[in-house]
Structure formats: structure tokens, C-alpha cells
Length: 355
Ligand SMILES: [Zn+2]
Image (cartoon, rainbow, N blue to C red; front, side, top):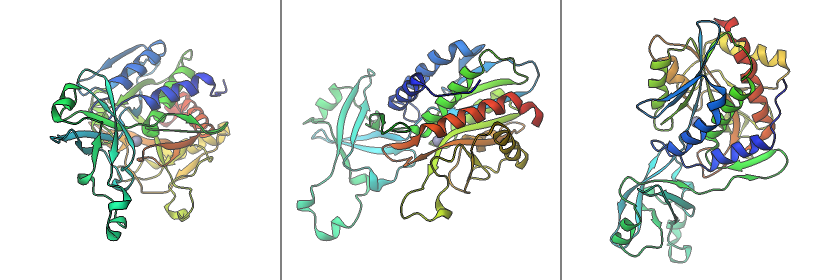
């Protein structure tokens, strides 16, 4: 079956992108995924950390772990000023220069949401030398329109309340979409679509799908999930850095849009086994799926944690190239998404050849 993303896929990407899932607070994303994969898997469970682990039993003994992380980078309320302004700490790798002047969504203790603005002093009152420098994160504050600490607390916001930058999912044209948290909701969508595409097929390997927590704060969920799954083989499915934009030399462009899924040859967390990379390239060639090799050694992924957990596993990374990740929004091409799903589906059908 040839995989084509339709309206349903677009809706899936939209729902996942707009869901709230800061590292450590992935519940909403997990519930959405549970509902969607239920018809495609034999069993699923949620572990102590919050990973969603689902199995599709195969004929043989070998286990392929497919991992995508549910969490996104965000913030946590760190202090509430007397006057009702909030201070916040980052969760995950933010670039402090690009945080000011965005809208923020804060999750309250009752599960509701409160909107706010990351305020900055207006340029009129800045000294010339202050205009040259980015605002340090500790000087930034969130303005939710409250006038006192009591008012903030009554809304259910306290120290530890999680927050994300608010950004709607949008389709810029036939092939390009933009939204928040594509790192790694796009990987979650690839994994869901892979399970869907394979639902009526008998497979040689057992597929253990792990929707991981807390990747953005140190690959935490994937480590304990791999310990439980004990995979022979693993792929982390990611939305990765594309930097094919003006002013960036080719040697610093890890991937580019429109060239298909990116295969990792080395990043800061792992060096995949060369035979896995070769095999993926072979599958892509046989299936006539365009793909690219990601320029090393940028980023780190759950595959690094999986490779080194327990007895270890042959692990690699297949990514959808996304521009502007770890910023308030990112941008990707639907055809890259489509080719990534096709590659992961074809790999899953044939991966026992590697073992
Ligand atoms: Zn990621």
C-alpha cells in the first residue's frame, strides 16, 4: 500500500501540535495518542514515568522499538510577584533571545488554561546600549493581567505551573505547515501513522511503540522504557533541525526541507551502528523514497539513551526535517512527513533481515 497523507493526517498533526505537553506534563498528549492507537495495537500500558508503551505482537522473538517523544520544551512558573507578574524557568533548551514578546499558555492546577504575555520594557525607555543586548531570561516576566499574587493564586497558578508559548497550527500552502512542538509531535504522528499502515499485516518482529516523556530534559523516559522493552533494534523518530535558510553555510545545515527523511550518522548522544544506516539507505533505495544524511554531530535523541540501556540495542534515528525547532513554532513539508512514514513502514516490514 502506498501511503498518502490525507485530511485525517493533517488533522492528526494539528491536534498533536496544539496539545499541551511540556516535559513532565505530557498527560494531554498521551490521552490523545492512546485513543488513536488503540485499534492498531495488541496491548498498551503507561509506566511509572508516564511513557506510553504499546505492543504489536509479531511472529518471531525479536523486538523493534519505535520511539517518539511526547514532551515539548516549555516553562515553569518559578515565582509570583506581589503585583501579580510571574517569573519563569525554562524546561528544555530554549534560546533566551527569542522568548520575549510571545503569548504564553499556562496550565492551572485544575487543568484549565490561562493566557499571558511575556512582557518586555518598551524600546522608548531603553538606553541605547540596552537595545543592543538580548534580555536575560531572569529579567523576563509573564503578564496575565492580574494585579496581585492572590489573584494569580485564585486562578490555580502556583510555583511549578507549566507553560508553553501559544501558537496555532497553520497550513501555509499545499505542502508546508507551521506549528508549535513539531519536535517531536511530528515523530509521534509518524509512529501513529506507521502503526495504522501496518495494522492488517503480519510482521516478523514485535513492534514496541514507545511514546516517551521528558526527552527535552535529558532523554529520561526512553531510558526506562528501553529497560522494560529490551529491544534488539530501535529507531527514534524525530523532528530534527533543518537550517536551509539564508546566512547558514551548508556545513552547518544539519538537514534541508524537501529532501525526505534524515538519517543520523552521528549526533551528540549516539553513533548508530553503520549497518543500520546502510540498511535504511537500502530500504529507501528499494522503495524509491528520497532521503538525506543528517550532517553530524548536532543534537541528541532518545536513540542515545536506548542504545546504552540494559544489554544495549542497535539504535538509529529517522527524522522529519523541521525549520526553527526549539523556537515558538516550526515549519515542515508534508511530503517529507509522508516519505518518513513510508520509510519507517518499509523498514519495519523488513528489519528482521538485519538481526
Ligand atoms: Zn526532539
